[in-house]
Length: 46
Image (cartoon, rainbow, N blue to C red):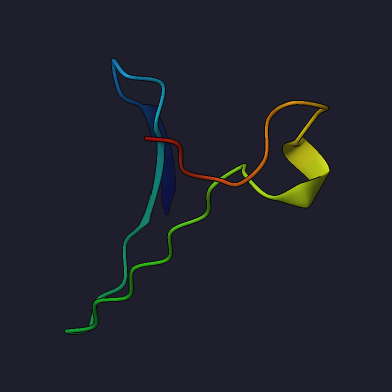
């Protein structure tokens, strides 16, 4: 069973039920060279 939820901050959370004691976490961010445009470089800005 797969469940897709969207948090209030826009984060999408996908959970999958497995009847065994297993935990796996994957994190994907839509940042990087393909998401940049002139004047904005790098995934993090200070």
